Amino acid sequence: MTLTMSDTEPMALKVYDLWKSYGERTVVQGVNFTLNPGEILGLLGPNGAGKTTTVGMLYGAIVPSRGFVQLGKNQVQARGRQVRTSMGIVTQEDNLDPDFNVLENLSFFAHHYGITGKAALQRAGELLAQVGLQDYARNRVDELSGGMKRRLVLARALINYPQIVFLDEPTTGLDPHARQDFWRLVSQLKQSGCGVLLTTHYMDEAQRLCDRLILLQNGKMIDQGTPAELIERTVGREVVEIEGIAEQILQKLAQQAKSWYRPFGSSYLVGLPTDNPQPLWEKLNATSPERLTRRHTNLEDVFLRLTGTSLD
Figure (cartoon, rainbow, N blue to C red):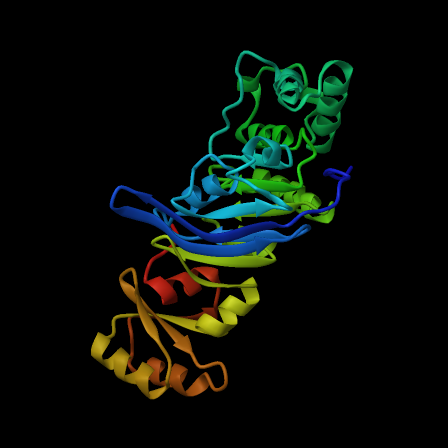
């Protein structure tokens, strides 16, 4: 069964020049983007980059210092309660009610949106079936695994047939199998026409799910594009991990090849020129390093190249 959203006209979420400061400390600076219906947009950055603050401003939990967010014709800051009826939110915490069983967590939450009685129970039952928890309807929340809890939180976020869903690091702490299950549900949201904004530290998750990515560093947008575009444009197709070579030698070789390098733990990361990678590879080989690995690039390399910082 496919996850479904509202039958109303699809709406884009538009973000205009968002800033947020706490005293003299500015944590988000000039963020602009549009999230379209049927699109998964990834917001990536290391801890402290401003991701959670940005997401909080998108659904009205945090008031911007400047700028605004608009869903359809309505500004989130001016008509927050009305706009949030078209939004679903999965935060980093499960915040499920331990006093209710699985079914009650959904049916009672439905009351916030005017869905009551048999309609609430029917909607809750539909969602439990859609996230594969129909056999656990009468279970207590503390009897669920971590992956089941995340699926229940997602089901709760969909109780109101939202057009926009915010997923703030939704699979942190889940095992690989549970993450795969969650990915399948997120892909179904996209197929139903829902717009999804995802923050994550998992690069395989971002590369697998997202149509577009926005990279944040110190609260600023430093780049954006499809995963393939960002990788090709920023780091090329291949990199070398090299250890046991003097930085001066590496710097000279990279400059001669019109390439780049970055410290990478106890080693270095070196970009191989896309048009002619072999000469630099052979020169690096000739330095007799302690360790030398050639591999395809990924999104983690993009962030290391742009910021010198890992996403972990």
